[in-house]
Image (tube, rainbow, N blue to C red; front, side, top):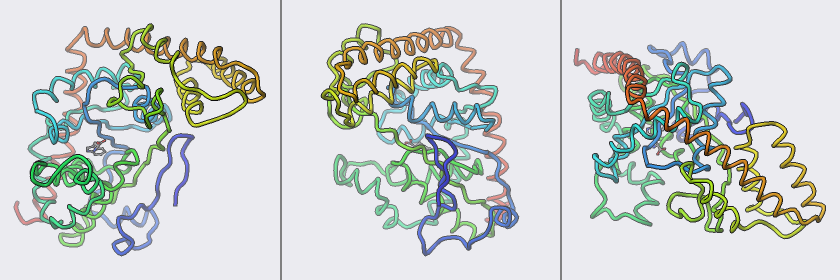
Amino acid sequence: MTHSLDKNIKIKKDYTCHSSLSLLKKTQTQRKKMFTMQYKVELLTGIRPTGDLTVANYLGAVAPIVELQAQGVSPVVFVADLHAITDKEPSAVRQHVHGIVADYIALGVDPQKTKIYLQSKIAGEVTTFTTFLARLVSVAELLRVPTLKDKLKNNARPETANALLLLYPVMMAADILLNRAEKVAVGKDQLPHMEVTCLLARRFNKRYGELFPIPQVLQVKSLRILSLRGEGKMSKTNPGGAIFLTDDAKTIADKIKTAETAFQGVMNERLESLILIAKGLAKTESERDEVDAIIEAHKSGKPVMGQFKKMLTRIVQNFTEEFQAKRAKIMQDPSCISSVLEEGARVARENAIETLGEVRRVLGLS
Ligand code: TRP
């Protein structure tokens, strides 16, 4: 059962791991009462520090958080730097950490409303809890997690893939359950990991007592932002077809100039993707109206794709220029990011210590 919160976000209610493992059908309030511990964090999301963001990253991952924040939700965002070392050198991951925090703040994540922390600042709690949780799932079950299966089919082999890949979803469960998150914002690709989280929470509860409230998945609807060069989705791995938030005005103009659109009067996925970018990055309602008007003209057979590209270029350039200026200002003052991360870590540590204390208690360790 789903219900939509707004245009980009839908909450999967009563998200269940496996039908056979689904919790008794209880209402949310009944369910809350059953657990020793209450939800602590309203909305949690983890981000991997992977370098420069594209407009697709902004529209798919950052904009929804900013939107929820505006609706009065208090999100907690953390940089999943421990997850990121699954396939990167720790020193390389570290280089991107401050940058991604600056990106998020420059894009509208307000540290007054949204706590931001670094996962490795609570590494002790995360890894300890990962260890306890890992006992509740078999190697065979972890090998069946679809994301791992895909990886092993496409670009990794059991002989060479490191073991952190196997534990990846378990550590994700540790992040979520330590925070006792009510909702977790993830993209579609992370749904199998959410299943593991729910599964582990239920197994833990069954064995040691009802400690953990089960999180809900807030699935950020994946906007189909395509590569400008028709290579599938826009992604960093095809940089020529991606617009990076760090691109300069000329690069943006050149990339859009050669982007594929659609024949007069025709709509296709590529043009729809460009419209999503234009409307998602437009700063004003009148710009969005202007985009609509051009597209109406296109649909009625008028030759307006040149005009559309000019408009799109202007919108993207305005957006990235403003972003780059804000980001530069934030990066100029390193104490700004450090203090944001310190405050985030303080809250995250408090929650993690409290949760892990309870875990130790029910495990008979304290
Ligand atoms: N695996 C997530 C991703 O790749 C990042 C992540 C790690 C995460 N831990 C999490 C997301 C906990 C949500 C909650 O995007």
